[in-house]
Image (tube, rainbow, N blue to C red; front, side, top):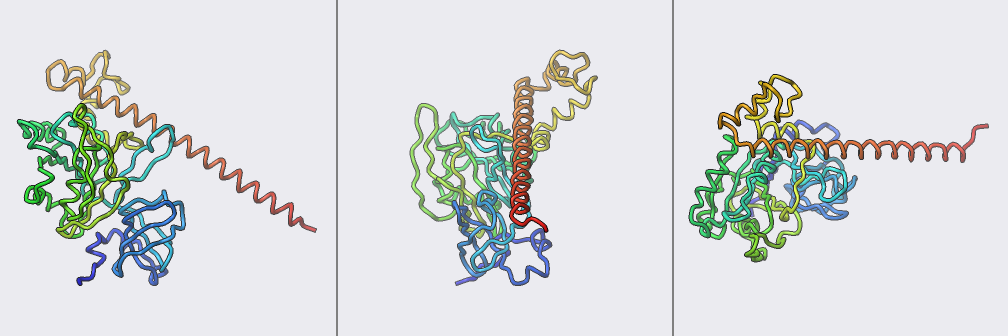
Length: 344
């Protein structure tokens, strides 16, 4: 049996540089599953079950930690993290996956295909510093799958779009460049687009799949938790539950990168605070008038900017309140200690 090395697991100089002399007796391990109060991890010595030394929610699948036999003692700084605002009305950032080389944005050649949603995922990838890859599934169920490929490819010169039959191993083998030895591919997308089928083919596993609803091309969740799984080609796959909601927060730079054409145009407007509506000298509206810019793209850009600003501000306020509360608790404990141990 061949032993798995740190390099096989995705270890790089980025993590090695974080080690100190005090870490000589600790074992590097990569998190492959986050449970309520335990972490599952992979190391050169095999799989580990670890007790986290901080809230388990602070870890993400793909993180590297330094551990002893039972505890994850230190989480190493990640080389990029996929995050989102947690679903619902709560105001905090949720770590989805860490140390991802390529974000596989999975959508299907049917009603699930949505340009606005793809732009959200592209902003997520840009913020995390990973390569975007749009994987279009179920090409056999539409008349012209290449039309979907062209629409996706037009969103960014940095993007690769590929139509794949997830049930055909030879077709799925076209993804090998993104799951070679030591590389990590994360799959994100809506329920029912074929992520589990694609994952099964890439890893050789056989998780159950569920049919989609015919009326809206959506399906039920098959994957119920995130996990890091080895692929047949020596890389790693992070599969995630289908996302009904992907709200952006702290992603202004990622949004600017995805909409770099609009970002550049905005610098040419007459007024710095131009809202690109009816102001004189607006370069963005001039581009729309010339037919060089789709007005719907402007609307999507402004919507993502507004959402990101709102969510970022809400999270910042929540962090400030939490910090104030923590200080009050610490102050109360200190006063209690002083009363129990008065001088004199």
